[in-house]
Image (cartoon, rainbow over all chains, first blue to last red; front, side, top):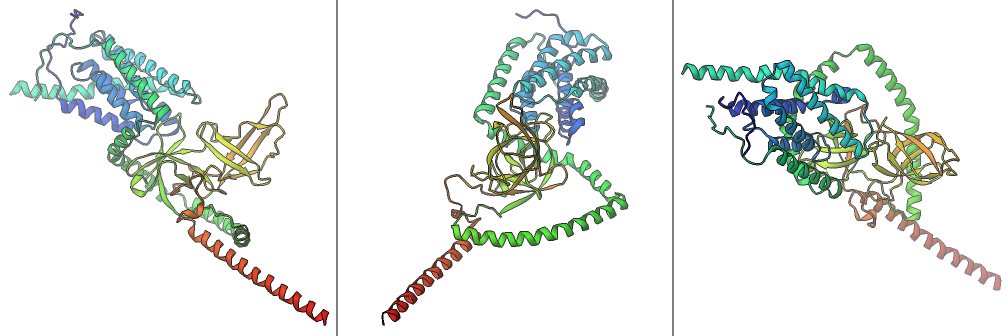
Length: 174
Length: 327
């Protein structure tokens, strides 16, 4: 039996599914904007940041299965070889799951630093995968993408927790 | 309303077991997609499902583009008009010459009973966006399977070959540009008829001609057109112009770089040619070129008939002359 320490939020009620999947859908839509050129290179992966957020805060509903499925969707949307994003997302989620309890005890900024490391590893795997398939190197600007993604963690944190706090408040009133 | 779940302890496989499982599946999917193109159904399904979302998202961007185009500087329009006028004059001469050449070509092809492999039928499509993939040179167009486009269809613009349709949605298609790495086009050098294969080099929007011996007769400025021998690209479409010929005797192959004539980044519309010519089949089997081919064939028959008559008359004439001599 797994006797790893419990997280501090084990007794917290789950977030409403419409909030979880609504946020994921919005992140997916941001990823689907017609990015191109330099903007495409430095674009943070909105969807991955949002998935990692829910992996940290809703580990009971969002895990590697969702990461794999949404990764396949991103592969099709980005006309990439099928399975690339799936592999990268699954690896990033695994790392987040390892660090999850630790992350929950940190402040938002320290959390963002952890996410930066994970996003950077994910980006390195993605670029390495493409280079190993014989693609040309696209320049060093792509390292900005995890950096912007880590910055996004901060607004994502507040945006995703605010409606939940409101819901919780309403329930307490009832 | 939120539901309360009572699983304090994680159940099911451990994260490590899961990540191993999913990684193996992801790698298997990559191999299946790369080697066997076995997952086109998945692609088609997801592309079609994502299409409405993408269209909704594209609205603000499209509105912005329309707005900027509306407020574009008048000077720019005037200078563009002037440039276009000059271009029309320049093209007028070319157009007349082209008519002459087309007429000549018709006669020649009739004489040789050659198949006309040019295709005329096609679908005009709008470029929606570049593929969101910094490693690939692909564009997305707004026509798909519902417009009778088939995988492998050739895409051209007003200047030359753009690429080939590599993935299909119901109402969208992904076009791989000829500048994509390892995307090859069989070409012919117009000047001397030398056939070769041009392949994209994946960067800077250039194409290369690999494996050409150092002694090859290629000069800077040579025009490349499709040779048509592959049966996919119709013959005679403009592909590019040779810009670099580096013949270093230390290597067994020359380094030849060409600049594509097509410019899909500069305008919004392309033409998708329907029903690629399949190798081994004569072009006359296709309705596309029937008009031209039957024209050629009938005129050839007429010519053949008239020349036979002429022969017969000449013989009769000769016989008559012989008889007169005998008397």
